[in-house]
Image 1 (cartoon, rainbow, N blue to C red):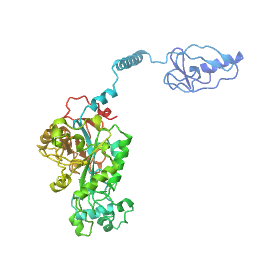
Image 2: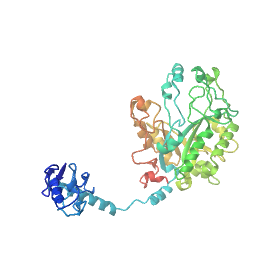
Image 3: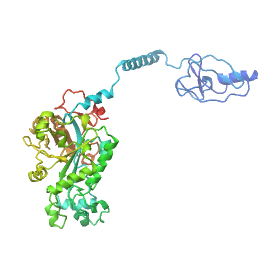
Image 4: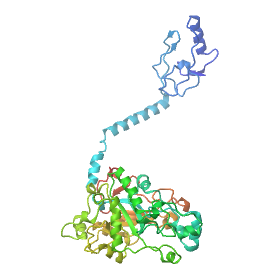
Length: 472
């Protein structure tokens, strides 16, 4: 046991110590029983009596401490200051002074005004922001039994060995503000319920009842690479809608849809054969999307096109909607550049996508030109994307191709994608750790501090960008 004397020295408490002698003196005057020992101060603010310490404290107790006995109180000399003395004390005092100055300076600085910064962001157009999205956002890796069969039929099967979190987690935890879904038509239901590779691997049938229901299905490769976090388009979109309703101030979320057909090789082996994407099937796709997202919850060509103008003319003259009008909404983009499919979607007097839900992957000079896809942002394509963005088009590009960048930790494509000004930058590696299995720490993110969305470096340079406060 230790105590600090009035001269600042430490003495051990015990037989013959000051504490024992003081008690004995008081006992002789009828002071009562020996007081109970209490633990020493843990710091300068812990209430205790300095003379009752049972272990050596880091500092002595505060100056204003009353020493009491069981029969009353008796004032004893105040302990020395709890704060260090000498050169150590001077350093301590200097630190306190510096801290006080910093606090005073921060108090004097004007506090951020989130409402003001959000108001500034509301004035930005949809094409004046940039955000990260995920590629094949639904994808889940096949089990090992199926991977063994994949290796026999596809020399590049390793590019399929990746998994994404569920769509709500991508939005809420991984800062994704765009997704991609691969869609297969299934008007009668059950067409993709029993994949060939699953049967070949000896796995039991799938037990998801939604696979038997009519409607569009979401997977990467029918009968071969089919695992998905949401097997139907309606289920995927419902997940997006629920997240959107919980965060109604989010920037508009692009949903890229690749309209797929079954593989002829798998068909020849006895796999499913999908119906064609004709105008009737495309009408059904629009209708199914609208069962989840009504027109007031989406950004469509009808929201941009002005009377007497084509969609492209309106985009070039007036621009896309401002964030103030597009918050809490989604926008659907067609990934396919197949001319026959696009002609079917624009058929019936819909050259400017009148009444349609999706924006087609177009090119300058066409009436439907509003969205364009340039997947490779490297080399001369970077300047191409920058030019398209300056003209007012919404552009999607990619920051990586499965395993090419992740395996080597190469961020060159990511840097080009961000500098290009593409509004939607898709990746398979949105958070750290996903590329670790390939021996790298590759991750595709916006620059640190940007939050889930930032001002576009090409279409909104020098604009005040509130970062994470861009979303309410």
